Length: 297
Image 1 (cartoon, rainbow, N blue to C red):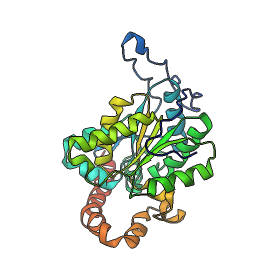
Image 2: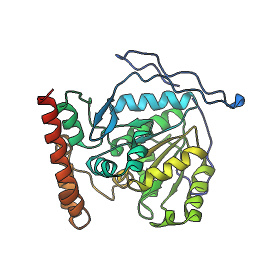
Image 3: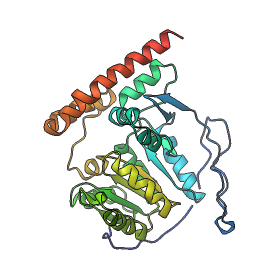
């Protein structure tokens, strides 16, 4: 059921089966908060691959979901960053943004050029994992386990429509809050604090934040302090996609790396400079440099 922004949720809590076909232990022991100590996260059973100037986790979407399930059961929260070419380009020129990406518990490849570059380097990642897909797969998990979710971002009314679509698909899903903050909410400490209080009061276990990089990720980093046992996904336009207010590219375009062309055709005024002037040259340099690095080893 969908609740308003001010509704306080029910809060369950729970753990995951060991991921198959991987070496290493399953997720570890819950932290002993009564002792006031922080227990280290379990050892990763996957590789972090360096591509586009950042480290990305070589995981499938299903493995991401099962890892998050185990961490939630163990009482550990985290954040997921889904870098594409635009995020990698920004991180390449700003050390603070690069650190914001690389310190996330999970970093998965949203952009197909990153998947191609990893293959060219000889260190492939298994597949593209997008925020637009994770909002559905993690909501399915949350519905099954009774974990409340929160939707933060998008134009007014869009998060509520996304909540309706998600609960229509997963009737047991508890949406403990939705909110569309004003565009400049984070230009003042008071505005940011108001949004953080609203989300923290709802006590979600999974939070989808669709405010665009790096605004969503900076907010998530702050919220992690207030909700240490929740998982956060910086998901960009995923809330609008889930609501149906912005259409996704057909499957064949997503699989062949042409989703950017579809989005450019839908929103040329907003995306032309970003895609054609900023991102395209970066993508060409990334792919060319990856090929050269592979050939000269």
